[in-house]
Image (cartoon, rainbow, N blue to C red; front, side, top):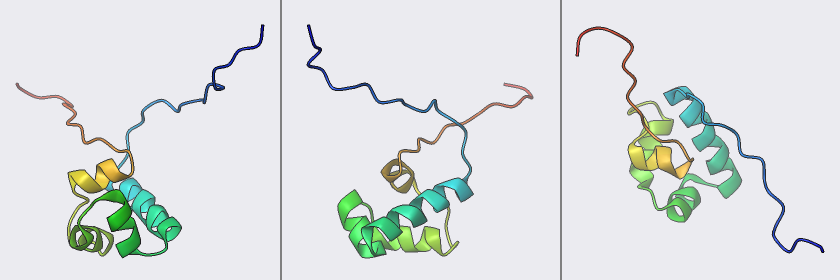
Length: 81
């Protein structure tokens, strides 16, 4: 009997990324959308925040990170708690 479910898609495991990686993802998404305005409208993010992040005036905000499927996480690397 043939299966009627959709084929499973391979999902990459989570990985650590830097703000530079997020900016690369944002630049690629903007290029695909055709403009910063088009991406901001489609992703539901603030165009000014996007512009500030891409120009290096501010780090990517949480909504910008989420727009390119990146979650912000804090990592404890040692020391006292």
